[in-house]
Length: 250
Image 1 (tube, rainbow, N blue to C red):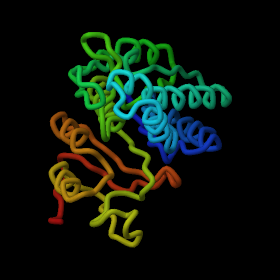
Image 2 (cartoon, one colour):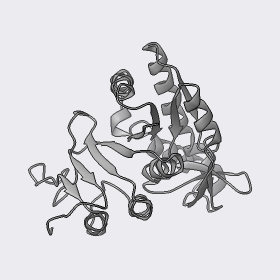
Image 3 (cartoon, rainbow, N blue to C red):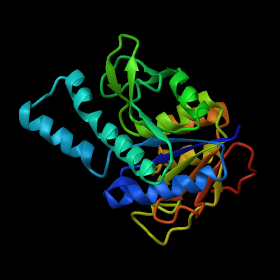
């Protein structure tokens, strides 16, 4: 069975109008892959807005309650996307991080993924459903809701891909790919069409914000192919990251 993980960041889900466009994109991927699993971030600046709300109530919010609050953002995204898919006649189901079996350490707001037990995800795939998973969150061994910190949704996507033995992860970002410098800073920068994991980690270490090092290190360890695509032109493959390429020196 061919399986692809699609990861949509906050920019790709910044407005309600975007959900119909993403549903159409997912429908196209269903023509190519027998299983599609989607990992979503919170819409636009939702997480920042929730953190601002917390700060208005408490100068230093308890981390546990902060995680309970900010994890709402991804749940909004996953439910709306499932509705958008249903509107196109596509059978979909949304799961929180804990429902998806993402087991984490117990550090609130900066947890690490320990393992993934994707039984419910596999079951839903077996019933022909598109599965939508809330990124950035999981559940600790003590059954507490946790969040994964910076880059958490991207790490969620790779962890699920590894657990499901997916073919690849497609990240839909607000940049055309990985460049010599951040494309947000210099839109004319050269975009690398392909990179190794080590090269990508080097670029990230120099300040690029496209993918977090946790996500890349996990993908490198398991040889999981990654693709960076612009959400506004999803058929364009910006940068491919995989272990077997013979890359030019950057």
